[in-house]
Image (cartoon, rainbow over all chains, first blue to last red; front, side, top):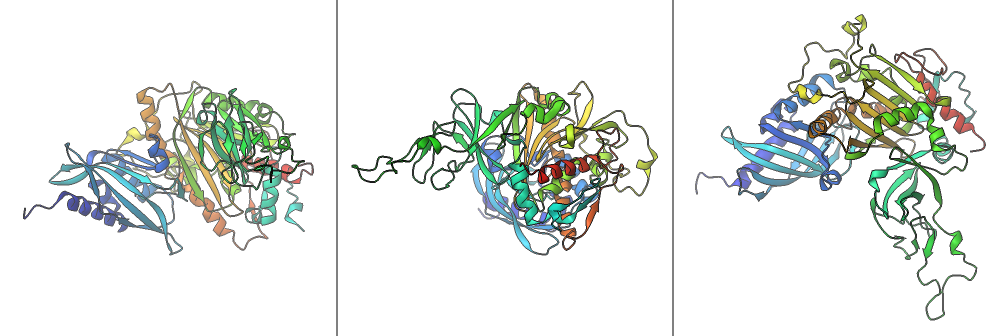
Length: 158
Length: 411
């Protein structure tokens, strides 16, 4: 089996690169982790458990993600801050179809102008992952926050 | 001189101490939230069946709204008459009776104390005192009235009927926006780092909308040059500001380079985010309505929300957003609502800044308890209505209503 990396390890690498891109402020790279027509949604456990369709952010396709990035760069007004993602190793829940289903828990710390990192959000990613452009991409990433409450505002994706 | 002796004159100067003072806050809880106001508790569609209940908060008082066997909605204080324990611990649920887990006292769906564990003791020993009267120990009830699927409660016997409290101008907008069967598409909480009034002022502040929120004018969603206006209920308690798209006229002010809000060449890669359909015959594209003290109905294009702001001490508050759709929506309309929902909420293109600015003002006024803000845009005092939204009239209207309630010795 030499030369073949196991699927969970490949997804783990994808997740870690994803987290680092955001944490490093490389927001323009964030949409590149997704397939062209991918769905990205931030919701909460309460809404997810009840199949509520609205999200805190809802991007249908990479173009909407790019708009989120250009708005955070040029339109929206907020206090400068950054994240630190801690992402669990993934659990592959289904790999029988054309897309892989996987999930991973996460914690995101946020450091605002006070200079103190604080837990901003914990939750899980619920992903559908596809092979595209010679690598893995998210075909769908649902961010399910454990808490119902977002402190102050959310402008940087999770 | 106590802050409570404030002489507001024309409501154009507001002491910063009102956003942090503990004595003011304690009085607000009593006179505003527990006074002659109607407080939003729930949507009727959250408790559709007999026995459905949902917890809520009035000021800081825990409350539960319940639908009884006859289909009526009741609301009671969610506090056991025995030792003060919360009766309903789950946020929502369904029950034939409400049972306090501490000592198993049970209440019917109208809040009457129905049974007490071991009331007669065990084998003739123990039991409640002879003179204990169960009928006098129910859960304290609020007056409850509903309007267009919105459930309101009040602790006051003297508050006017809900319909009169809202008044014809406010009812007309609620009729327009919520006058059909609605359902919940999502519900989110937004934690705010400041006094509740800072956010309520923001809801009523038509002046900031296109300045702080550059997303708004950039995409033509709301410009102060559009046709629109401000309306009040009697006494200034509630307000409605609205604008009608497609009535915009070129106005040199918005081309000025020094207005940060206008960004040339900024375009969406996915303009379908702003795809709308003409949902309302009147052509209203934006309507923001505040119902005193802490409730709001909002329509931004096709996004319909209601918001409730809960005070959490002088320095904190929590905003709850309900995102709504009409049951009769076509799949295309529903999809548009959900995409446009990116505009609102804690992560909304045009709403996120409102959460941030509450915290910035709180930090800004630290140590300035002796000083005041200025609310002189559009003149001073509180007129009945205005056809200009370049105005702080509705913020002054809030303070007029607030002041009357805070000094009301009968409250």
